[in-house]
Image 1: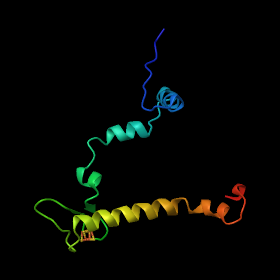
Image 2 (image 1 turned 180 degrees about the vertical axis):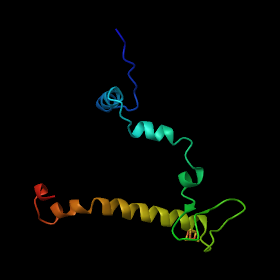
Image 3 (image 1 turned 45 degrees about the vertical axis):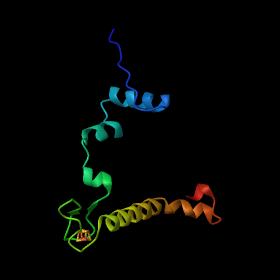
Length: 107
Ligand code: SF4
């Protein structure tokens, strides 16, 4: 009998169970894809990479304290944060329908 090697990625047993079932089925998961991306880009992790326009991407370093347009690290981080928040809100805008008087089942 082959023993199963259970992997725990999460504090939630149900998530670990689903992960291990996905592995049995030969499927990759967010955990596998995250691992495959290591090490992740340090500029991206700090939010100091900008791809807002076609002059970029620009990265802030100790030698390049501004993007080509003159944006500082603070500007780039703030713009990235606002854009991520707006993208996230827009991705769930369909849920607003239920909040303005419609039924949740209509979503
Ligand atoms: S820092 Fe400025 S120039 Fe560079 S990609 Fe962003 S917007 Fe374009």
